[in-house]
Amino acid sequence: MNRRTLFRGLAVALAFAAISPLLFAADPNGGATGGIQNVPAQAAGAPTLQELGAAVGQTRVALNFVWVLVAGFLVMFMQAGFALAETGFTRAKNAAHTMMMNFMVYALGILGFWAVGYALQMGGSGAPMGAALSAPEGMARLVGPTIHGNLWGLFGAKGFFLTGPAYDVSAFAVFLFQMVFMDTTLTIPTGAMAERWKLSAFIVYALVASSFIYPIYACWAWGGGWLSALGRNLGLGHGYVDFAGSGVVHLTGGVMAFTGALVLGPRLGKYVKGKAQALPGHNVPMAVLGCFILAFGWFGFNAGSTLAGTDLRIAVVATNTMLASASGALMAYLYTWAKFDRPDLSMAVNGMLAGLVAVTAPCAFVTAPSAVLIGAVSGVLVVAAALFVENTLKIDDPVGAIAVHGVNGAWGLIALGLLADGTYGQGLNGPASGVTGLFYGDGRQLVAQLIGIGANLVWVGVTSYVLFKVIDKVIGMRVTPEQEMAGLDFHEISAPAYPGDGATVNTPVIVFPKVAKPAPVVLPTSPNSIPARLGGEA
Figure: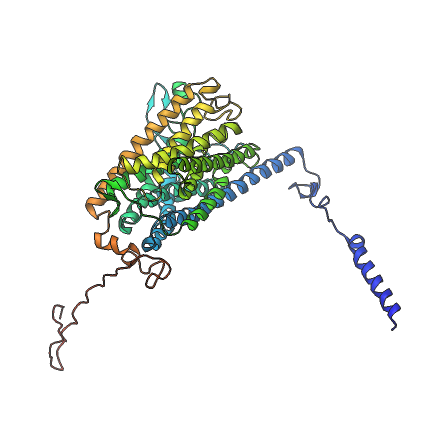
């Protein structure tokens, strides 16, 4: 075969390869894939109007299911962000212990919420499936007093162990989404109480908080309870409104972090003659990575709270979330630069988180400039609050959880009462108008928000403080001073995060070996007798 023939053959082959997709193409642009023949109908390809309507309605609900579940998966990934951020901001000798708490709070929280918490929170909220995902109609037993003909709901009573009316696809979807919110709340105190908290005490806390403390307040806000009914019962706007959890999640977690850190007391060496000392975290890059993971998951946290992927307001929610995180980070960066003559990376990271926390309640109800303002205030507020907690209140919070989540959770609720512009929220908790704040003409909404903050401080503050005091009296909240000095990785769990002689970090390691028990003494016996061991049973 000569060269010319070879080139001709190659040209023909290439031309065939280029043309064959057009000659044998099926549906490269998707225009012919799917159609009326895919609508479930008694007569294939000829659905009735009712059959078309049913298909459209189920498709819409299915899209909302997928949206809520994917958003829930994003929120679940925030656990990794919390674990990295909290571990990076604590010392190397406690790294595995901090990771262990962040890991096990997930498992413990799921089980407590599954058994009891979900029913208490959502067991009175059942309703027909509408534009957004909801618990099924069978879960509609809300318990509480009736005053002047109005129900003041306290807790739900349907859906324990996801059985009975909760054995339903919508109940399961709502459970998953609400569960990851609850677990986010429970993770917040692990940072404030790190480096001296016993794992046995932590386990009791996680089970009680997930099954009782968190669900009751969440019912008041999201499960049809009395806070959400303040508009109907007292004429206060839309009642207490908390779109994605500045109060239900973050204020609750911040209050539990405060009471827990108060009962535990500061870490050894934190205060010398009453003056706070720096105990730097061992891996700031790890903490920054955790912050970015949290910010990523926050899109599921906030935009997912529409509970409907067909609600196009998700674009406003997601963008407001991003804007507030940016202004929060920038203002914390600038504020620490002005105050300390150089910017502080850890405070900038917490400023970003504070902006996210603050915008979580109002993100669906405010304009973009308002979202930037909310984040900017939070960036300054988180630095001032962290310094106040540490230097004035003498509360040791290794990661700044109280300032980030507690203080800025409250600020987010107030911001909603001030800045909600009335363009969204029609029908929420009853009123046909949109949610409107003080600066847009309705000061009653701000009153409802303040009542919600007060209810949280009383309920969560009192119950969590009592819980921690009881745990402290019964099993003890804190490790021994010797264990704390050596590092919890070497006493509370089986293996440290960084084994060896501290080659990866400059942290002294002191291991206290357990005293070996004396070997049992075997007494001489006759061949026909049972061996007797000193101190044992014959």
